[in-house]
Each structure stands twice: as C-alpha cells, then as structure tokens.
Length: 328
Image 1 (cartoon, rainbow, N blue to C red):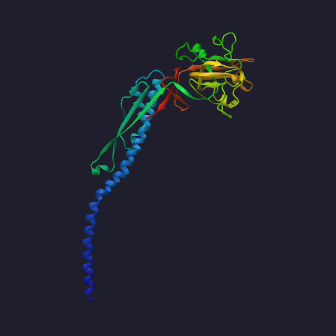
Image 2: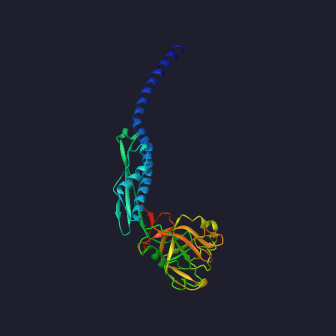
C-alpha cells in the first residue's frame, strides 16, 4: 500500500499539469470577447459622455448665433459658432478638437442650426479593430417677436408712446425719458385730457395673490387696476429690484371703459430699461417726477430674451424685442 502512494501522487501531478495547460488555452480564447465587452462598457460610455458635452457646446453656439441675428446683425456666424463650441467642448477628455459646421440660417420662422463634431480615440476598441469614432451633436434655435407671456411688472404703455419715443422705428438709443402715468410727457399721445381712459392709470390687474406679475397675450383685452399706485401684489422691494434691468412690457393700441371697468387691448411687447420711478409713498427711487404725478423713467431698447417667460409667433408685431427658443 505504501508503495502505491508515491505512484498515485505522480499521476495526480501529471494530470493537474495537463489541466493547467487547458486553462491557459481557454483563457486565451475568452480574452478577445472579454476585451470586446470592456470596449463596449468603457469606450461606448465615453462616447455618450463626449456627445453630451458636445450637445452643450452646440446649444451654446446656436443660442449665441441666434442672439446676434435677433439683434439685427448676424456677423460672422461661423466664427461665433466655433468660438462657443471651443469654449464648451472638452478636447482633453479623450476627444480631439471639436469643429462647428457652417451654421444654417432659415426664415419663416427664423431659425439657425449649428452642428458640432469631434473625433474620439478609443482605449480598448482598437483590439477589435476600431481605433476611433466621430461624435456629433446638432442644435436649432428659433426666434421671433413675443406674442404673450408674464411681465415682471403689471404696467402697460400705449402704442402712441412707444412710437413717439422711437420715431416709429426700432429702438436705437439709450436716451432716458420720463413717462408720466396716466399723462403724457412730451409725446402728445393722450390729447388735452391727458388720460387714456378715465381712472385707468396704466396698471393691469396682477395674476393674483401677492404676485407683482401680469400675464397677457397679443390681441386680448385686460382689466385695469384703478388707482394711481402700483398693483396691490407689488411690494416696494419687487419694484426696487427692477431698477437697472430691462423688462418686457405690453403695449396697448386700444383702451376703453372707466375706473374699475377700464380695459386695455394688447398690441405687442416692447423692452424697457428701468432707471427710476415715482409711484407715490415708498414707491420712489429718487423722484424722476414730482408732486401728484406718477411716472417711470428709462428707455425703450432692443432686447433678446431666452428666459421662457414669453411665447413667440410669426404674426406678433416686432417692437425690438425677440424671444429665443432652443428646439434642437
């Protein structure tokens, strides 16, 4: 029995040595698919990350080009798009330099499309014959005059006032003017009575509660809030925070009624930069007007808004304000 043990051990060693060779063969056979799965997990994941970064770059480029065009001067669209793609893509994350294709400008509705692309060098995919891939992303931005939305101040101006201060064209200066409510300053818009409607002081009913906002739409009539002080939803801080800011305000071309029944019909929207106001009591930024007068001071200007507070349409009147929409 003792003589058999060494022989048995020798046979076991020889058998195990043979199996170790088989395991090596199996491992070498499985290595290629294992690397393939690694390529899918790592390299494909990196492609998605690169495309997400490139999408952000394309969005930024399209918004920048559209903003320039909405202001009336598209300029060098290719240079603008490339600059924004460079600034927002990530060439150090494994991708090469991103390239912006020439932006495509369309009309009716006005829109611009920017496409960015970049190469991506893979880490593991070369083992299965794929050294690199091309990543691309496209963004489209449309713009037009506002057709409805929520103004940050429930105040409405007359079409005559806007036309008189802009000369009937697009706003082009930053000359400050004082608009007396409900009277005229030097425009002659309201005639001898100095009133658009008796008891209508240019304030709209707010959206309700303690909200210093008014939601309106072109072609619709809205009730006036009687009295020559701001709407009840407006706090002193709400209005003070608007000094130095540009806001979109509705413009009316028709008005009627009296007192609490006064109404205004919205013609369009214009951008107004607020530099001062005097609405009585604590609603004062330095008395741009005096006595019993109520007024706001500032100037109409060109403005591009991408906040999402306003809608746009092709038939809304263009008073110098444009709304951008990223539609991809």
